[in-house]
Image (cartoon, rainbow, N blue to C red; front, top):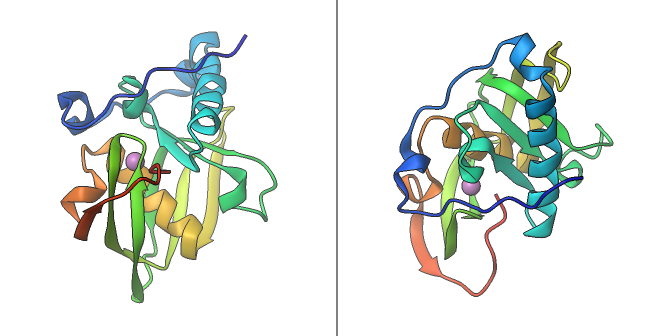
Length: 166
Ligand code: NI
């Protein structure tokens, strides 16, 4: 059975830590596989398109990117120990929110293209080139693993009735 997990919200200090990398053995443990399922369920329950483990109070370098952000992949992306590289020179500002920073949005400058490397759900090496919105979500989620929130980078921070999605 999969569970909706409580979200950690700003200014909780747990959002400000550098999360721990995982070994292949840890990744393949029943507990970690359950966490993946629970995070996916939690993300969709909150209308999210991305989620990082610190947002559900887990000290783990694990991110989820919803399949709607990566249509070519056809399923939710589950990446352990993600690393970004090949940042495009081109950047763009766009609106972001965050499930951990309710009722606030802001405009964040992100690279429009990145390469996402890491380990798959089964601990296998994974690489994917991401563009535009998918690249934005990946940068936002990887920031979470380093204790960085979008409000640290955003301009024009404003309140909203919309729910944050990342
Ligand atoms: Ni977020």
